Image 1 (cartoon, rainbow, N blue to C red):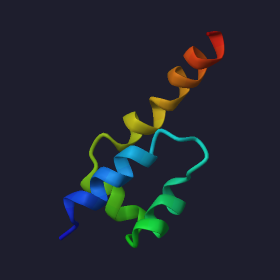
Image 2: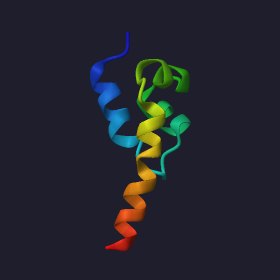
Image 3: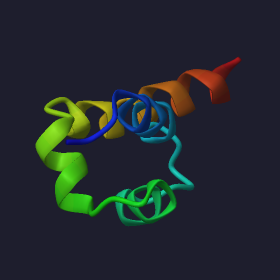
Length: 59
């Protein structure tokens, strides 16, 4: 069972384009597949980084 704390840390790191899913999984001591299995909105979290970057660049 994956600890909720690990999942929350992964959710915090996912929008950052400097962190790959593989790197996040390695730092947290889980496999990338574990992240995909336990974070259903993983792809949306990754995609959310693009509008945030564009918005930040326009300010």
